[in-house]
Length: 334
Image (cartoon, rainbow, N blue to C red; front, side, top):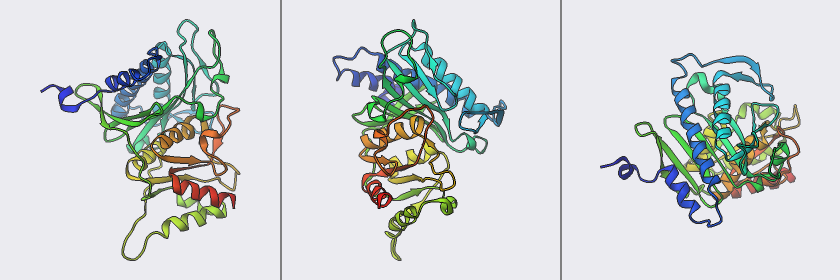
């Protein structure tokens, strides 16, 4: 029996099948998603071999976020940029690791712009904890010719696609073009991503809380009230809520998407702001959460409606089952 018969639909087949539902499509979006899959395979291969070829550890540089750049951060960043630059589908890219955008040469530029975090959770690399790539896709707004950062400075609701690739016990690519959220697992033998979870729906009850409670002294009072409400669902006879925090946003989100959990990164009273990046982390994951029936907020509004006037603004984030996200909003506003 063939691998296709064993495992089913490949990423390319799935993307092209969806393209058939849109007669106006020109094929660039499908090609872009396929190339993102290629970049994911290349990065996955490096992650698996990191300890053997001495690409663990820091480069000695600091990125625009003030964080130490890991060797694999740089490799993943360069890989993503080069694959997408050559795809013919992208006009401009923004990376969490870089101060400014990467503008693609006009002769190679396509109809889309992409923002990405090349390796989320990279501080966990040396411990072999799951890490991942997060990406957001927007239609280009600038006329033909050279694009600019302005093509990316838009609220998340203008995205046409988003997803992530988790590098863990297996390599899993999850994406949505706004209709369903679907996950594909990389088969090392064939080098293909095969559909393993179709039309994922986020469970509508919080079963898992994902947050670093050691930061509790630096949170605003409403967070304590929110956590007390969630934890209060447990009783002596049944534990309905537990805690799981990997410390890798993309891995925490993937588990919560599948099993039913809520991720929370509150404002830190010491700085007066959140930490996660709106463009590269919050927006794409909020897009996926909403398509899967969940929600995401910065307390005052849905993440996808937050205006964007710079490439690297930080945000507070609550993301998970919609009812509990709405509860967080009510307590935040009270």
